[in-house]
Image (cartoon, rainbow over all chains, first blue to last red; front, top):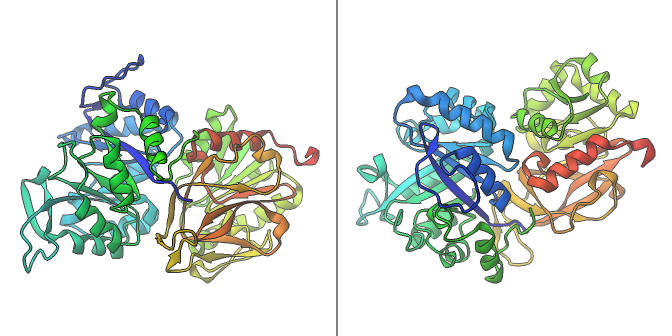
Length: 259
Length: 212
């Protein structure tokens, strides 16, 4: 049976992870490569790097992080943030990432999904969606709207429509981030996740709101997500990947226990 | 030296990185002489069967691969490489190398999990287990419950059951590891499957088919 994936997400700025991490082991907590290695050894099923570097001049620093990570870990990892062209995608994939994720660039230019899928295969192209709950309307019938700029700019695009459209355009996977739930640690956006996961036939990664293992169990079972993104739960040492997986296994969720 | 066949199919650097990490020299190459002069050959690939076969033919590598198999040199197929070793793929209606008997089929849609009755997504993407049916030196020491990383929408359907070393349940129990003579081939990505995957690559790098 296919396992549900647990995916730690690392925010990287100018080659350093941005959240303070309380790993007890003797690792450089600001070095994304060391963190990637730590999570690899702890049983993460996949990793996500999100490049929040402001200046595109610093792009080579992220490419170097990707290259060094690929030398160290032998599980898939994806890179998002600042990818605007097929050439950007190629650079990241050649450096050793398994997947690239596009978010704002795809909203502004949906063709990049198709071009990326044609050039590298659908499985490489993850659509990142930032979503906010709104009043249901003729324009936003699902009651969930696509936003960019961390939720400050509403795009007038229905999230459910966009997910299906992205699948048609050639996205291989969707990383679904609820801006409402993000950072709350009070649980994933269940209604949104279930709606999108049931509407598309590509895997959906739930993102935003994870605070305790119960949240992962709910989103993976009831909301039918294929994978769950986590950050602060494990970054701050509150939980371990192994501990989370043991809990999930007890709850009847199929997870990878041998690594 | 290990030759990793370069036919412009997907990200080949990850296979090379894993092999080098294990301490073996390898070369990602399309040069016939380098391939025939190597100690063993890895045939990876991500992408679509139609384009892969036309690229292989354009580079003359289809015949090189058949010759390598006939020569007795160890060969490891990975993912699309594994599929192309069979006779035919439903993907792009593609005649393939025909080194192994059988075809490559698309997962049916809708794909239903027989145990739960729920609909399964295609591609089959993520970690799944292999039910190991036969012993083989390349899969020696691998835990029965170890998981491997898969990404594919088509699966190998060998026409001779004795080829099948392992099966993976995803709506149907498809052949995820096959072997014959000096050839082993897997549908999953050992280079992306953590330690169990690296162990398989390591076993392959040491495998002597003449002393099985």
